[in-house]
Amino acid sequence: MSESDEARASASEPIRVLIVDDHELIRRSLALALAAEPDIEVVGEASDGQEAVELADRLMPDVALMDVRMPRQDGIEATKGIKASVPSTRIIMLTVSDEEEDLFEAIKAGATGYLLKDVQINDVPAAVRGVHEGQSLINPAMAAKLISEFANMSRKEAERPPQLPVPRLTDREMEVLRLVAKGMNNREIAKQLFISENTVKNHVRNILDKLQLHSRMEAVVYAVRERMLEIT
Image (cartoon, rainbow, N blue to C red; front, side):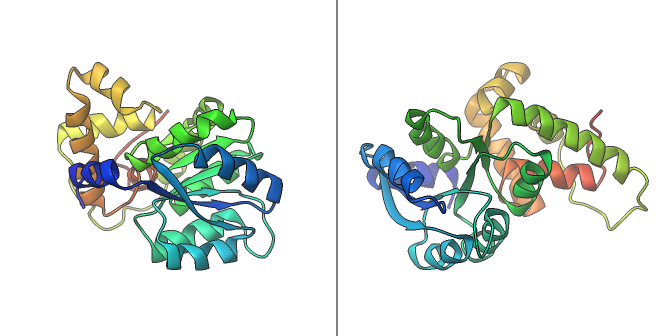
């Protein structure tokens, strides 16, 4: 489904959300905040990663709010499982963990957003809408850590022997990808390149199609690993 098709669908159908957290109080708080939004529907709740994967496979949510630290199966492993069975589900990690390793592993697993639990509960519906529309959402402090991790990865990959040829991106697509790697959103990229936000969205969609990936941050990880990008 194209972004325009998704937009038309979302205009008539609520965004289906799965909440995953081992603390019932947090699940209830998130559910109440989201239930107040007419364009969002909470379709299920899970208390651990294993249950989350099973529910996602059955409920096909548009967005999952995912804790990192949980019993039986953690949020990162659950994210991998959900992206394998329901690739269209966008996943926001909502966690107390500000560890760089958790952030990077979550992005590699396919998460589209990473927010700390000190975020205002009233901001969660906007985050759900944002990732549903294709944005990548990362807490500003964590974005700086992610860019630092990309730089470390870039240096390490420079020492690795070349691999198979990678898909070729246009010069403009590479410009967009570099700005994504700097943590810019679509509006900021559009302003930087003097193009419209819709044009940015089209470039991002083309990048993901060519690389056969699901999220902007996955594309950055791939581009750094394959030496398409150098981040210092």
